[in-house]
Amino acid sequence: MTIYFYVEPTDTLFVRGNLTFGDAGEHGASLMPPPPSLFAGAFRSARLGRDAGEMTAFLARGRCDDARLATCLGTPENPGEFRITWLSLAGWKAGETLPEALAPLPADLLRLESGFAPLQPRPTGDLVASAGDLPMRATLIAAKQEKPRSGHYLRQTGLARHLQGQIPDNEAAVEARHLHERDPRLGIGLDAQSRSVQEGLIYTTEGYAFSPASTAETARPYTSTGFLVGIEGADDLLPDAGLLRLGGDGRSARYRRIGFQPPHVEGVPGTGGRFRLILQTPALFSQGWLPDGVSREGNEYHLRGPGFTARLACAAVGRREVISGWDLYHWKPKPAQAAVPAGSVYWFDDFAGDPCKLAEWVAGGLWSHNPDQTRRAEGFNNALLAAWPQN
Image (cartoon, rainbow, N blue to C red; front, side):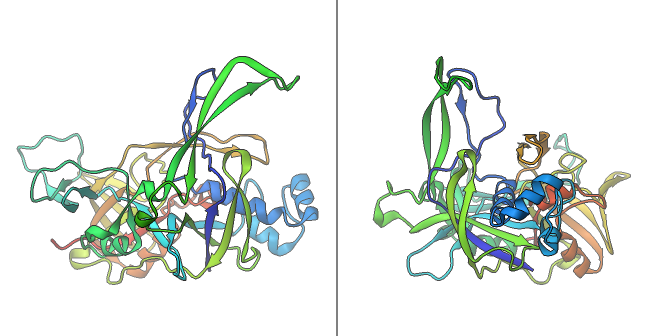
């Protein structure tokens, strides 16, 4: 069972990127949205820190003494049943009972001056040269030539329409400045031994302030902004509300349990065995941009899963990201890995098999038979099953 929490930062949030940082005059950039591993570590640490005895046992032996907690958290090398199954930004309006999920624009949807425009699979033809070898290319379908607008998120109603294969309304977009604002901070290096200032070592770090107050009240779509986090395997081990240490410097955040229902689409796969997969969190694939389970067979790529098959017809993949992090237990950096960004889209057709098996595979994350259990628990490779647009 997945339980959902609304997480609201109470201070500027610093989510370190993976660029080299530390010399005099350098700028430490932050990631937004942050990777799901940020919340996996925060919630697991918060639960472990509620019991000093269990924390002592975990630090000494890498495992909790309490059976239920050990089943949930597992060990550093083999995580238990705990897994992040949903991560998105969120906004909460005054008077509403639940927050609204907000997602980065999927790779097959552009925000133009006149509204949303989709990218749809189209055969390239003999006169079009391309470096790819899929039978179709994601092609912009728009009434006129326009420049895409950046800095927008897709509201929950718009995401639901997009998963159903429909074009979202113009009101389904919200500007990033209404959710968070950059908050750079100036820092001065300190000598670790003397705790005195190191001459010439001045740097800046980039943070994000949520629920920005600088926006005019009449233009603010939300009273509070933060994150929606879905957690599997924790059941009632987490309290309904509490505090987290989140991001760099352990900045505080409040969390509370909510009754969120993620968007869901019926009747997939549709006509011709067609469907889409939209990455909801960054994905770590052993074949680079190609999901695990997809292999080349002759001149085509085919997905073969437990009880189903399909052909990969088209893909819209964003620029790769670098995923790393810090291992608190072993006190060392995690290996840097190239990741396919959230919002990347894969179109499949010629589906054969059990649709329930496909839905089960997607719900468990797009992992191979021998997944990286640590990264799986941290919430990578989560995807949404979506309809292939008819027009």
